[in-house]
Image 1 (cartoon, helix red, strand yellow):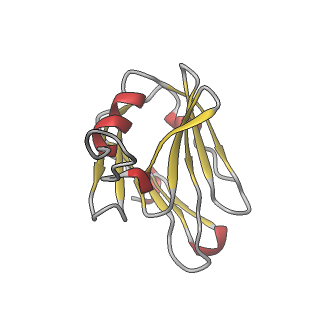
Image 2 (image 1 turned 180 degrees about the vertical axis):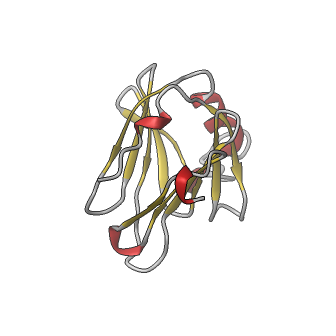
Image 3 (image 1 turned 60 degrees about the vertical axis):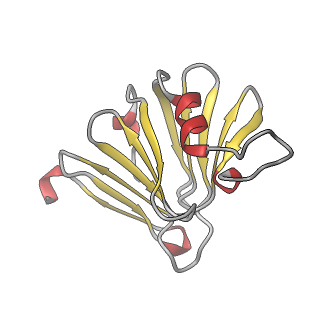
Length: 140
């Protein structure tokens, strides 16, 4: 059973669109990265605040939504307090202080949904079909 409690205490430093809205990088702390190719959303106060599909949408607003800027602003300064990983689907929910949550929905039976990498050699990959592959510092 994969335990992601080692993320507790980290905070999002930045959120970047690496591939025209199809691949996103959440930088956690100094050198831990959650790279996401699956749908994701940020929930705050019981409602969806922003999601990957909102990037560059107008929605009748004066300017298009900048998910990089707005997502970073929603999570920066808030520490991870709990991470819940669905062992059967590899969906992950990252809970932050301040009633914020990042949900990643692993949507494919074949493609990897997300990867979590740290500078100490940890690598966790959400495989297609909901399986998890994990390597630790001792495996690096």
